Amino acid sequence: MNVFDIIGPVMVGPSSSHTAGAVRIGRISRELLGEQPVKISILLYGSFAQTYKGHGTDRALIAGLMGMLPDDERIPKSLQLAREQNIAFSFDVTAKNPSHPNTALITVWADSGKCTAVQGASTGGGDILITKINGMDVSFTGQYHTVIISHNDSPGAIAAATNLLAYHAINIGNMKVYRSTKGGDAIMVIETDQEIDKALGVILENLPKVSNVVIIKPI
Image 1 (tube, helix red, strand yellow):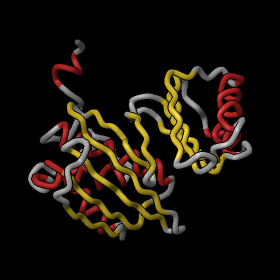
Image 2 (image 1 turned 135 degrees about the horizontal axis):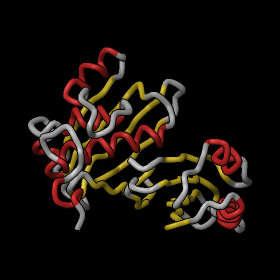
Image 3 (image 1 turned 90 degrees about the horizontal axis):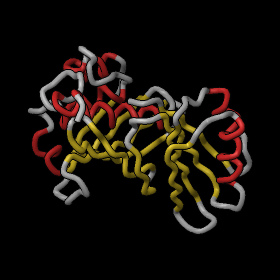
Image 4 (image 1 turned 90 degrees about the vertical axis):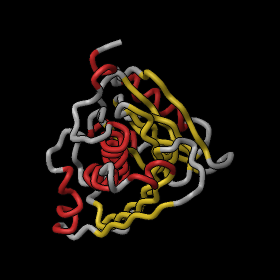
């Protein structure tokens, strides 16, 4: 057990699960959108739905969506800051049982019209698990260098991406592939030991059958 396991993350409180974890879910949602959000709709499940105002989960999620990290002193003012930047946001709650009690479904729009929906859970101690992207089941924590590759489920698509990473001396620590249907939309989630720079991301995005690439640094 290390010190982080004992004292928790460096953060603006009051709760590692309801604040720090929520910031990280929001931040990854912003990274997946890839642009400045202009409209945000957040659906809260379980204990998030019951205590989000008192525990500051609403402010934490918006802070992450604005690009803040869990220790950012602006988090308590994030709702006001979002309004000042003309970011429209709304919260709703549901009684449906989530897979984890601290779950949020975030739908976010950019000025370009791009829309991304991300479901994530705050699993304790500031840790999170992203469980859906645009309705497709995924699973990653945001603790590692991660590349999210949206592609067509077809022969050679996975090999092209992994061979390119190997050529650039990027070691894959963990990898999972998710698909909607055979031959349909698919997502590679690849966690790596090394950082993937933007230039390599562009090369990945230009591979055949690849439609989008998002590079996420550890959050």
